[in-house]
Image (cartoon, rainbow, N blue to C red; front, side, top):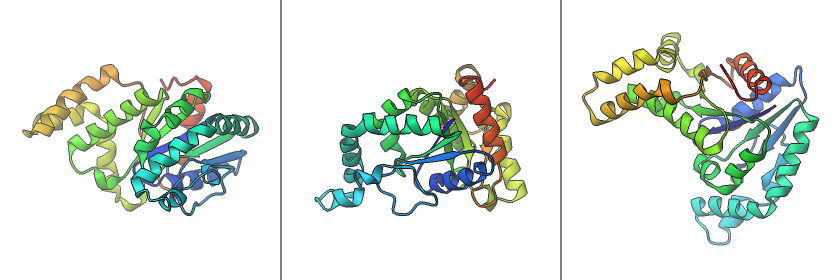
Length: 248
């Protein structure tokens, strides 16, 4: 089973990869893949690591800025695409789970040929889109996360589930509020209907469409510190793998 973690910088991808992997290792053989050319330290030991080929730090010595170096690193990785794909496929045969940690700059993975082509060639990968509670302030923020999850699914061609990370920083009441917004689409749409802003109107129209266009996935709630939600994620990964991507 292949689980891929995506999310913006600081969303906790590497922390979740390491902590969830440690949780799984109690019962399974787990492989780790690091696709971030810019990361310095990792909370897990990768079996496959793109930094063995190129790092952002090395490219910046050539005069590139940080963002340009990230893009350039993936341009250069394309020359070794087949090698990395074969390594990951072999690791998938040897392990029960393969956890893939993607770049801190999410757009690098989503919009570069390397990430898209990789996902097209992996067997039934499950993508977990991590969001940070700090970005969820207003009802239209939840609509954005739901739709962006759908867009990642569309872009990568892989089942994608929304995950609220770092729930250990939330009070019980705050977590319940987040769950209400994520899980009760009628409630969220009703809240948006009374938002007079342009954002509110747009989000209302978009969320009204979600039941028609969104695949049957459910949100999960995670914490790398406490391990909360790991059992739910394991169950989702199992359901996804056994039904070839159908999470009904």
